[in-house]
Length: 166
Image (tube, rainbow, N blue to C red; front, side, top):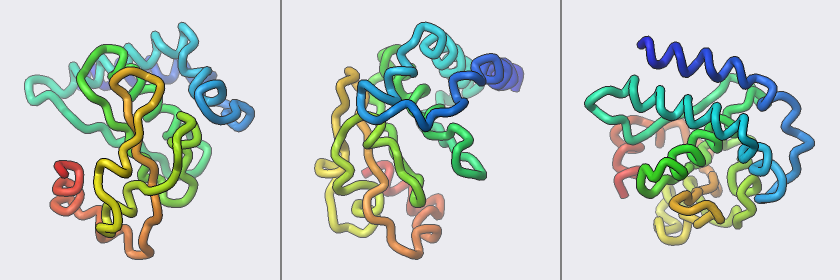
């Protein structure tokens, strides 16, 4: 738990990165641009390293980033961690946008929002059509796609794990 505390403390030091993201724009020249500043890279690299350390020998392969309200920076944090993982050559990294209400990941990385997680859940798309490469080596994204009204049931751990494994 100590490593996780250090990661959270580091995140607080970089709080300025998460303020007023509305003016960042979209695409690789927009929102993602701010994540490539030396300060942001250092911050997210440190948080990523501390998350790995807190996972211990089990070696977590998934990280969930969420927030209670819109505008709290969950997309920015998730994108920053995904970029850090890809830069540390953790293997192939997939950033999944599970935000059903205001998805932003595809726009942030300048890729098509067509087909995504919801389409995969519904069986109307296959993984090859929903995973999109970004300009960042080893980093791909999956948008939220068209989410069914009963999407909360789809998040049940066994169902979601099966989906992720596919």
